[in-house]
Amino acid sequence: MDLDERFVLDEAVKRTQLVSELLKDKDELKKAHDEWPLLSADDCKKILEKMLTAHCKALDFRAPAGGVAIVELAGNDNGHYAPDADVIRINTKMPAYDDFELAMDLIFHENSHDWRGQLVKRLNPSHPKPLTPADDPPYTQALMFQCNNSGAEIVDAGEDCSSYQKQPWEDHSWTTGPKTARMLAKGLAT
Image 1 (spheres, one colour):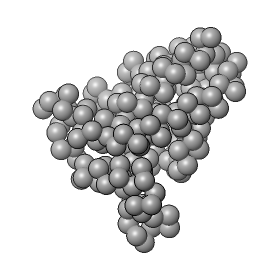
Image 2 (cartoon, rainbow, N blue to C red):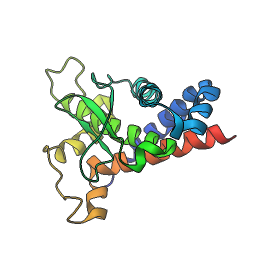
Image 3 (cartoon, rainbow, N blue to C red):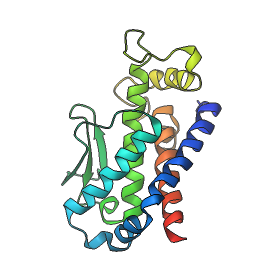
């Protein structure tokens, strides 16, 4: 199932606006990019939370209450959005923590999981800001996300990675994270 084309186009515009907004602090971000491996966990967290806040503002949704947690996680987990704690966890033992662009990719990727969950919740008519067909394209895309929002993937990553990444819930994150991070890195390089 492909993502809704209008939703993808609308989000591309918002992504461009997000990167333009972030580049208003180009000197600070360029310094963070250049010094990333040398920064303290607290300094990394500040930059990651700045990305998180800007991403939420660009898409007009609330940020995870727990923000970003810099932690050591077991296994190959680069990081994840934890809905139970409403936090994005970044694993200090994985490459995504050690590399500025990979860390940005991870923040935008995992924050997209939270945003999609919030869109699905807005399909409930009793939600304070319910989505209706008049809200298209988010409405149609939220319906697709809802089909894939059972709390577990329809296809597990270990089962078939390419199918896992193509399901709507993941397709969106696997597009948003890298595209946004690359745009930001390109903007910092010019």
